[in-house]
Length: 429
Length: 165
Image 1 (cartoon, chains in turn brown, green):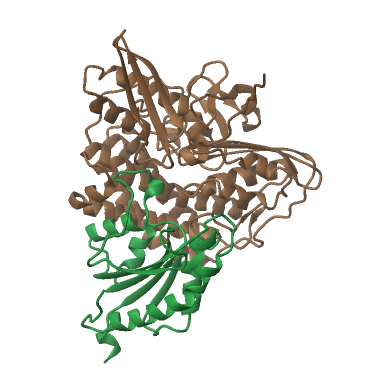
Image 2 (tube, each protein chain N blue to C red):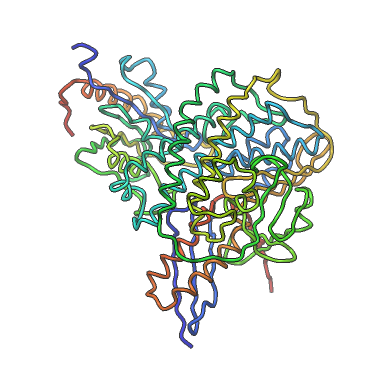
């Protein structure tokens, strides 16, 4: 039996540290494994016994790229448990800070991490020698996103201004209006970015995915909605555990998430886009069509175009929210703890981020469960790896390795977020 | 010398004050407050290295102070002039988590956004545990580092650079 093993011991241009093992046996892909070996961080255990007011600041520390996703899912769950509704301008401000996170996270991935794959450069520094203007554009986009994060969150990394019930401080009108000029410039840059990435050479590769995303009655999903899929799933976020399960696998400190009845699924830009194309504005839909996208995109390599489309949407949405902003009378609505269970689910840049907390009467956490997007995508990433490798088995190892690494980067995996825990079994004689 | 003839100088303190000796940059920055000429900008940064590229824009020279990995002696101050020396850096194309100070400088230079002169004061640390305080020898180096940086800044502000290694 002829066996080839292709290993990438340290994946490049992803958030965090992971590796890839591919085994080819008798001319077929025998196994494809995305190894996530970052140490588990025990956030769920760390949250036990902590008070509800501490929670947003604690979960923000899970990720330096998408802290808002963790904060927003957490406050939604807390408010759900305590029977509090946050609406009006406070809700708008939460959506606005989330736009900032989408802009900075997507810009970083599209240009600095993903674009070099299509242009044949090992990294953004080398790419900048030929495409300096595009890298400068990415930095401008990232700055515009960071400015929103700083204005509403106090700082761009691990913001400190989000609290259950709203914010600790809300900005004045002039403060937000001052961000609009840079956001308009960012929107124009993002439109150019869509047109640029649409010209990249994309491998002819499609898979029949089950996409899962939030869906809201009127908005492109960021901060709330029902959980839907293209195969008939349509549930409240509180019913997540009845439809989804997490499994441990030996090669990963991230749990693998599966739909109980069907298996692997995809979250993130491709899923949001496929399930909510009709929620994009007409100009953004037209731009997507101009970029060669239909209402559904099943080619994961084209996710770079969808991410760029979502940057345009986030800039437009941020401008709309700023234009309609009136400072609320209070920075937060009153909130009082009670015993109960709360659920939160929002759309992190990489896909749905689901939280559940069990609270005691004093608002302390008895149990926490956090499901990040990358662990949900991991089974689909591995299925992509096997399918992609099968198309290039006759190629040299370095070609297979390159194509597989690119397959992983299509998902913008945030490996540090996904590292969870590994069950430890001790066998004693 | 008229203020307009002086070169624009940035002093950039790097590091996480909540991680033991990585907080030496912040401590040196605290000691420089009110001791630098008014036309010199002092910034402290703890996280996103890509943001440094924006911080540097428009400056003729930058003096950066950061903690360094243990090598010889805790608290040892090493002056590195990037006109003649290089900083150690991660392998090409590594994880985004390995995009550090050296990579930010390389990218800024490629984009034409790096100051012409960059001087790094690297102070050797000993312990970098989360939540730990600065160790004694490293904290003790802060006054000396601040004095050296003030002298460096004075030299860099002059229209014609006069400093050597």
